[in-house]
Length: 138
Image (cartoon, rainbow, N blue to C red; front, side, top):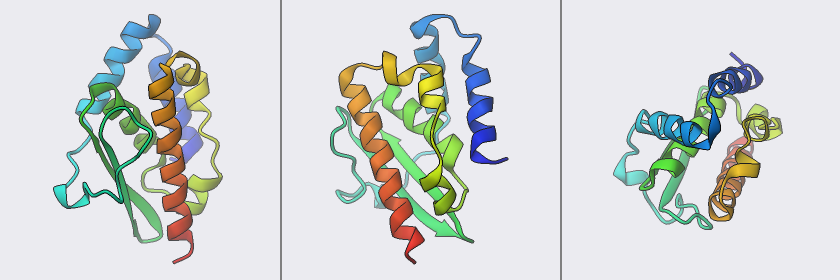
């Protein structure tokens, strides 16, 4: 399944949810399913600044595809990073870097998140793009 297929699937999952309380509850549930990040990756280098909560994102290249790990101490932030990783994980860095993550707009995250959460989301995207560029040069 390619990145756009994953985005379309996620949009369909969120479509029947009425209102932002239901969407946040679903997001929290998705975040609870995110595998725990190994403590060795919770470093200052992997920590995302600009996020209200603590958040770490790391990636390693395996067989030409980026495999991400992430963790956060906040439930909604953990859910946000979980859905982003559900879309981009296990794809070549070039594909991730050139993809437009349209599901964020389509579901309404960019217009309905608080300014601090939106800032955190933008920081997540910047970190992912930076990791893609690093691994594209290897």
